[in-house]
Length: 322
Image (cartoon, rainbow, N blue to C red; front, side, top):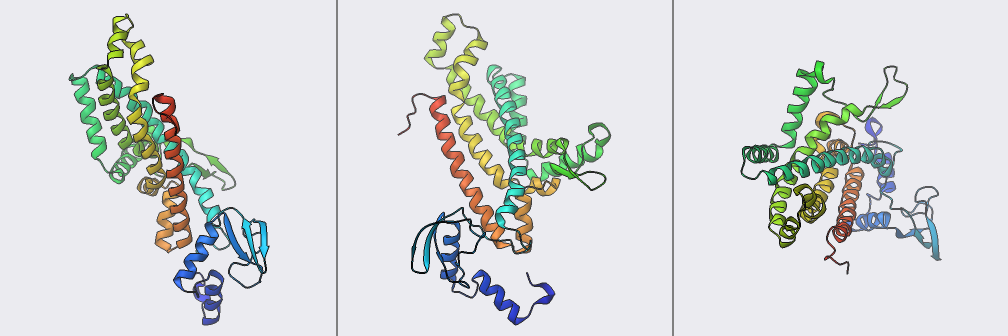
């Protein structure tokens, strides 16, 4: 695939040797673990796969034993098969910020609207307003993201384009009319962020409503009411903070999932993010990009979960860091 029409047996052998594909699978796996590990062993013999090539690993040699060196380096995710001369780190570095902006915008919409509507729903429990919010949140949770993406793109980007001035497709950075410079197009963020935020919005509404109703039955809320505090003061100073724990749990999981699961939304709206890059890599069998993306996403899951544990301590003093 990399050689294209220039393929012959000699060049194929050179490519296999370069990437270690001429070695047993277990050896290839060991090579990959060695590449992605911050602490790794490398050969000083030119021609070996693990040869400490200048500029390839950006490594610092810690110690040497014969022809083998123990080095400290950034994880090396290798090079893309289809984008010649481009490392996987560069490919992911170009797309991950776009996905992060999209996910952060979507989760912000879900958090702000979800907490507000959840509070309204709890305050007006069993009224027509509460039931309407519950129906809409259930509907939002039930609609698949690929369907809502197509629906929003068609409705707001095509049918109502004269009023919304929104495009059916577009990314955060786009070339100007002269094709000379890249400019930020914030309006292209609106539709994909709304679509991506629909499902977590529905979850936050339900969780906030149920959690707040449970908090309202606590003794300290009754004490606050007995002291003459207004309902607004009770909610702002006492209820919201204690009701946010399950919401934070859900939001953390959704945010991490958005970084990995925005594939349909990015692909339909033409958003140049990590999800779209993963689809392209799957279609072209660009295995280093796929494996690198999986490792980055898994690392983000771990980091976000650790941050959520720290936020718990701030939200609930009863939770102690061990």
